[in-house]
Amino acid sequence: MRAIIVGGSIAGLFTANMLERAGWDVVVVERTGEALSSRGAGVVTHPELFAGLEAAGLTPDDIETVAVDGRILFGADGSREQTLHLPQRLVAWGELHGRLESVWGTSRVMRGASVVGYEESENSVSVQLTDGRSLTADVLIGADGLRSTVRRLMLPDEAPIYAGYVAWRGLVAEEDLSPDVAADLMNCFSFGFPAGEQILGYPVGRPGGASADLGRQLNYVWYRPVEDPDQLQAMFTDANGKVHRDGIPPALLLPTILADMRREAVRVLPPQLAAAVQATRQPLLQPIYDYAASRMASGRVALVGDAAAVARPHCGMGVTKAGSDAVALSRALAASPDDVPAALQHYDAQRRPTDLALMHHAQELGASIGSGKPAVSAMEGQRLMRAVAVAPELGLTG
Image (cartoon, rainbow, N blue to C red; front, side, top):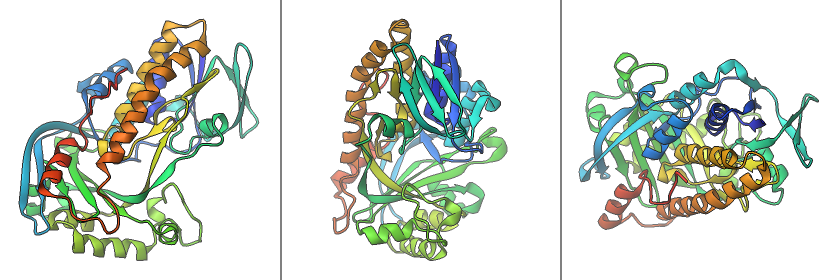
């Protein structure tokens, strides 16, 4: 049995490793020509994530994580308004991707190849690539992210919907923070809730080695409303006038946009988190979207990860969801190896309600973000501290 997986990011590598361990012949196609492990920022781990990693051939000891004991809500003046004991383990996105890719084999990813179409027959699916090649397999799996080509071909009338706000993200080396700021932020999950906005931060390691050897980084995500279409377009336009609607490469952010962001950080954020934003060498700007596919499978084609459903980052479950999608898909195919379409329908019935519920949960966590919205109450702040980046009871392991 052969599988073609479109997308060499975390969802694709999860799926590739699991299917190969189940005896499948797997081909991974990735449109970008360069390695992906330098992308991404921080990831909150959950038990379901470690279950997915083990199914993909890794153990918890293979992953370099950073532990925190709890959470702190910082006020506008930098005071500690609330604290919460909540132990968690955190990891750099590049660490996870690099470990999954090392199991799969970096040289085995077919890089620089994009899908332009596919055709199904009774017993197979044929995939056409931009370079003219055609690949044939028993199943095609779209793991190609928010703007999935496979999903566009399967569900041409569907697309992600902009949520009305953006996220500024950054990774800051611990040594780039002052000792006082590092003492406040590098041993906890930190929060700030300016009126109509949210920011959170937490420490992660650096890909490729132990934190004791390479040091730690602070990962933060700052959500800000951008509801005017012209303003949104301007923020994602580079110096040549090209609009990058799904996220502008960090190096192409205009200096004026960065300068405005840094000024706003000082104006609205708790001073510790504002200092972290100021110290960021290369911030990343990301529009926030909602999306859940009306179906995650059709015939011999299935969707996993962000190609299937996008939950806003508040729930901290994107990578875990990708692993859980891959677990459910590999199990469904193992249960019905002689009837791939039936296996994919079972996968769809099992995962789609869960992914939809996760999307709705993330929407609720971001409901306080918006222009003109008041600062959250102390009670609401406490609720968000307990709920953000904590796995909800949605049966994510399938």
